[in-house]
Length: 112
Image: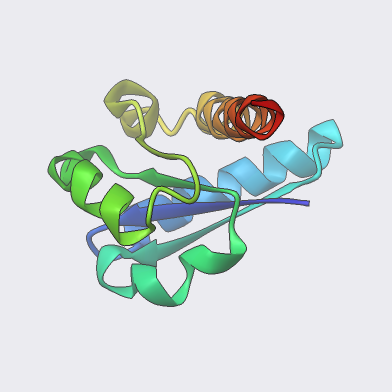
């Protein structure tokens, strides 16, 4: 199971997006689960996820959030157009691609 964490100011706007992402994952047989929390609760929630996606309204915190998770997992901002249109499929695909990219990078580093 791939665990995706969405972060925004209060977790409400990303909460709706999470519900849509979970519906799509279930319908397409994708073994993934998204959940949303406010940025202030990040520390209590990132340790059991595979990727952190942040809402475009807090994109300015991207570097700070990467530091807070210790660069241990991929962190990226949600595309503002996908976010605004609640394009859950695109956000899910982007999150999953970041997980694959991270595992590929980790495998290459392990081989070095």
